[in-house]
Length: 269
Image 1 (cartoon, rainbow, N blue to C red):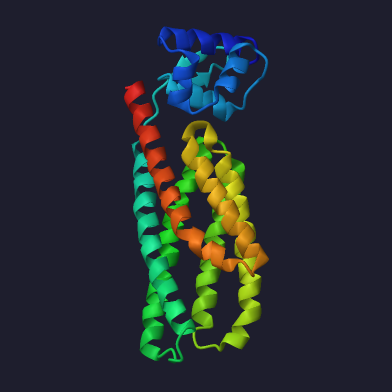
Image 2 (image 1 turned 120 degrees about the vertical axis):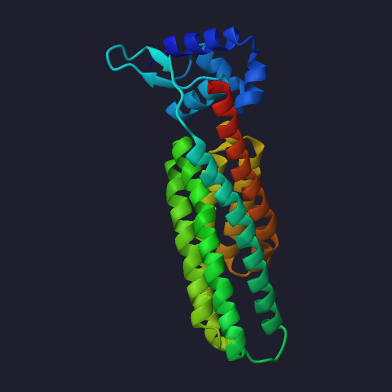
C-alpha cells in the first residue's frame, strides 16, 4: 500500500478505537513522531512497523491480490510461537545458571594452584554441554522475534551468537588442562570473534525498539558494551561484569515478546 492511503487507514483505525496518537505509542512502542509522519503521508514505513501498529490496534492484515490496497483483518494462531518464546525464557535462565557455574570454576582455577582433575573435567564438560544446549534454545527465541519483526540482522546475529557460544564451550573443554601461557592466543582470538558477534547482536536488538520498546534498547546497549569490551581483549573484565545484567534483560525481552503475542491473540479473538 502506498501513501497517503496507508496513513489515512491508520488514522481511521486509530480513531475507531478512540485512541490518541500518544495512546497508540504506549500500545505499540512506535514513536509518536513516526506515527504522525505516517498518518500525514510523509513517509512510507517498513512493513514490520505497519504490522506492529495494526496489531496494537487489534488487527492484522493481508493484501488482497486483486486489490492490493485493501486490508483485511485476519486471525493467525500464535500459540506455537508463544510456547517457543516461553521455552526460550526458561532456557535463558538455565543458560545463565550454567554460565555462572562455569565462570566460578574458571575463576577458582585461575586464582589457585590446584590442578584440574579428571573428575572435575567431566563435571566441566557436562556443564558446558548444558550451557551450549540452553543457549541454542534461548537464541531460538530471538530468531522468532526476528521473523515477527522482519529483522534480518537479528536472524544473522542470533545464529552467529549460537556458533560463538558453542565455539567458546568447545575451546574451554579442549584446553581444560592447558597452562595459562598456552591459553593466551586462543582466548584472544576467541574474545575478538565473540565480541564482533555480540556487537552485531546488540545493533540488531536496538532495531527491535519498535514493538519491544525500552527493553530492546537496554539489551542492545549492554550487548554493544560487552562486544566492544571483548574486542579490545584487555577490557574483558567489563564483559564479565555486563554478561549477567545483559542476559537478564534479554530474558525479560523474550518474555515481553510472549506478552506481545498474548495481547495480539486477545485483541484478535
